[in-house]
Length: 315
Image: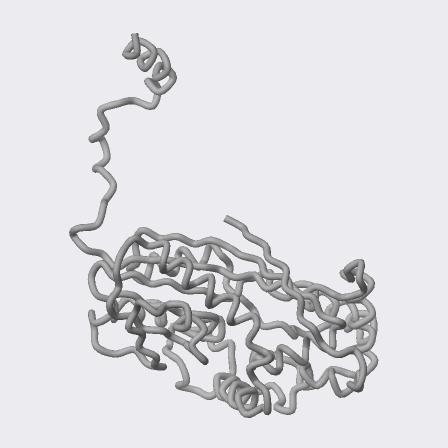
């Protein structure tokens, strides 16, 4: 299922130097070799977790950090809608990556536990996770830990950024950097594909899986305002293979390419955020299960005769 919603991000057009606004894409920390032993042996070490922590802390210390919460608030309300769609009562829930309580503000009927670590096996009846898993190096292990702490018949409801997130910005930077510098480096961090996500949930032990996709489109005055907001959200790139510096000419060319290729009729530019929503249950004997192979009593070939049978019964 694909739903698309357009939001409008109001940013002042004047009183902000264009060059300094591009600082959201510049990296003071050069790319380097990840430290050994930082992840499990089977995990890919894609992200610099220490740098991501510094980015999040910097964003939280800004004078008005809540002005960058519009995307998380929207996703939080959608996760809450999915929790209420489940015809069950959950007296205890764990909110992973809660931030300022973007989900909790909509779940007044639940006793929510806000924490950053998972503990106590089989202690939670529902878990919510919002936009925090896309920076995890060992995503399979993280999903296994989430499954570990759920009670039997507990449910995990989560959301994370999808592969088409910020595709407009990615394409614009690649085209501009190729034209100005003869090649390009990755400036948007990699995301999980939707088919891989379903596989990872199943491998972690979840069953009765549901994965659907939303697209949220936010309109900005220009590319620099978009990058400034990403920095304010703490969502700047932290991949180990990121480029330490983007040149001024490349940035200005990317902004021009972005506007030329994607601008709206009113002059603003769109930024697409693809959201994967996932629901998975921990096994319990009371859950519905598919019938055993060969136990069917009706052939699919008989379905063509269904109308004739129903007409005969009405007579």
